[in-house]
Length: 156
Image 1 (tube, one colour):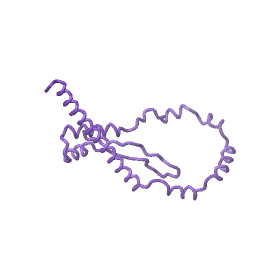
Image 2: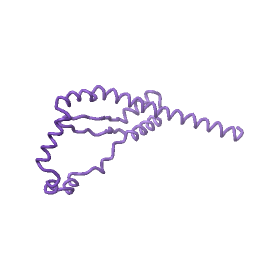
Image 3: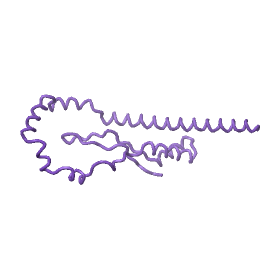
Image 4: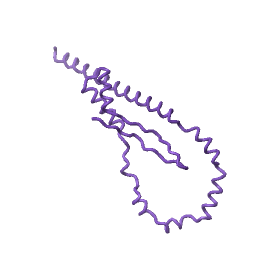
C-alpha cells in the first residue's frame, strides 16, 4: 500500500522558467499509520487512504501526442507553406506592441510562489481528508440507523 503518486505535471514556460502548477504526492503508508494513531482501526485507515489515493489519481497522459506523432503530422516542407520569414518578422513587430520583457517580468510577480503552493497543498490535503472523513462518519450513521430501523421492523 506504500505509494507516492504525483497529481499534476509541470509545464515549461518561455526562457526556461519552470513553473509547477501543483505537485502533490500521497504517501499512503504514512497516511494509514497517521490515521491509526488518530484512533482509526487498520481497516478504516486503509479504506480512507485508498479513497484518498483514488481521488488523487494521476492524470492519464496516454492520449497526448508523441514525437513520432508530431513528426508524422508535418514536414519542414509542409511548414514552409504556412509562413515565411517576412511573415514572422511582421508578426514579431505586431507582438512587440503588446508586451515587453519588462512587462512580463512585472507580471511574473503575480504567479504563485513555492510558499503559496505549499500552503495551497496543505489546505487541499486538509480539505480532502476532512471531506472523506465526513463521508465515512455519515456512512457509519446511515448504516447504524438502518440497523436500528431493521431491528424495529423485525420487532426486536
